[in-house]
Length: 83
Image (cartoon, rainbow, N blue to C red; front, side, top):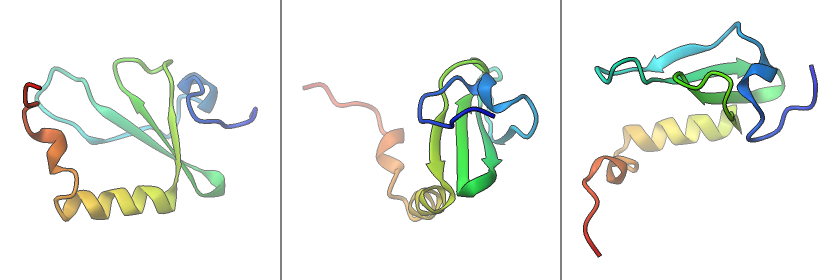
């Protein structure tokens, strides 16, 4: 496998191991995650499986999930306010 970097094409990480832990009734547009070696996690958009991948550490993912469960990401769900 070549060097892993943030924004790399997801196809460079292989087709196996991608999971859809977050899915909704939005017509199949899901976030997919892949646990990789070396303490890394890849995140991609299911509708663009060859598109860019967000690469983060498992520790950063754990912090994000903990924060989201605590409501710290709820602002992402609120409607945007006009400026």
